[in-house]
Image (cartoon, rainbow, N blue to C red):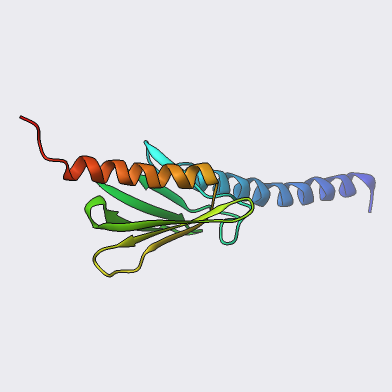
Length: 139
């Protein structure tokens, strides 16, 4: 083989490695962005189940949504704010787990790996929105 063929082979090999790497990084970045505007809390990549695509929780005045991106598609679970029965925060050394139970008997939303500050903020927002929803209207 002459040096021209070796250089071409090296260039094609680098391109063959670079294209999938860039596609992987771009996909990981795109799926890790907040999935909506507002109060969205993303779990840490350093925790179980969140290495590539971290789970996110959005808290709105109407609902709590757990969003889990996948390679193809996504999984969303939503609980109306009036149906949230309790919010449990399990604090560990670095991160916290958030468990949001429903009053309807369906499976709770479980999310691992949130920062402690975010876990407390999720609980505070849910309690605030529930209080606002059930407060009697002022005349």
